Length: 166
Image (cartoon, rainbow, N blue to C red):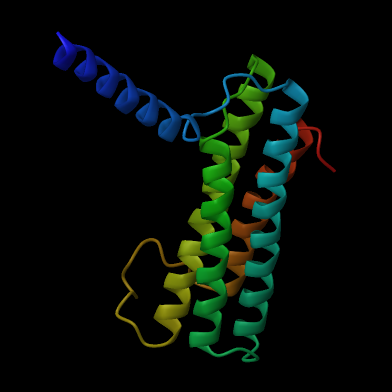
């Protein structure tokens, strides 16, 4: 009888330990709408910053003021920023339809900027002699990249306005 009792005590202790260990891994089930909108706006501000940095990289690279490897390093940094912005949006649990719509618009806008940054890396590689000349994703010129970036930045700005950002 005593052995059975100790087994139950041991099982209870293990269960309590597992619950305590996983409690910090759970996502908050309730977030205020204003907090969700602010989180979306923060992520979109990061995406806007990445877009602006990419614009500067394209401009400097096309003028010969930046080397290909330096440009690629800067673009990789922007992809990390965009990854962080996307993670912030994908892990957000919107409390209402408004913030859900804001998050959806934000995800689309971050995706648009990410596509342009990836195209910029391909353009940089093609300029450096990479065998990407026939790839459809490689923009033909800096002007084409800047036009794509302008459209993506417009999407970020619209999504940011939807989220109540500046």
